[in-house]
Length: 183
Image 1 (cartoon, helix red, strand yellow):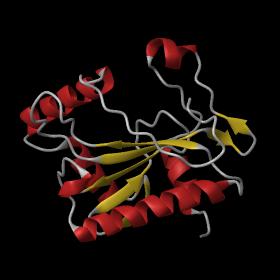
Image 2: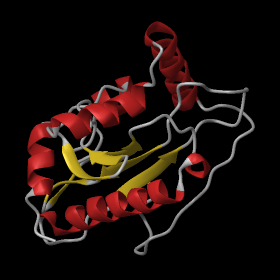
Image 3: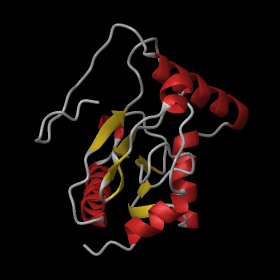
């Protein structure tokens, strides 16, 4: 899973095609936009900010939240409350707020059980392949690899074989646990 190095590191992948997951996401986001005239990710972030059910941290127009469809225990998404296709499209204030939300999320994960939380993090910007992708809002997804202080989350047959994730915890419980972390 890429977590074989014992230090933080990043990788940037560039393909000459639109990968299957991003193609499916782009199509779904575009269908939602055509059906409603609205941006799904920005609306989700705005709704979470207003309802405060799954919110971990929020500042300005940026929200860190546990998505209601989380695949990993303590999964966190960070997204703006307005449609923005990429990090470059964020204002200076939104970039600062994004950094604040990301810092809050990662610090809370590490302090949840007072052990470092291994995670995978993706920055999902609008694809640059295949033309414009209206309806795509930039987001960061954090996939923590622990489900308890002493238990890692391993993918099972249903997750790898069918792409259907089984989660150990509800997003409401995860958000409450992370909000309760003292920073």
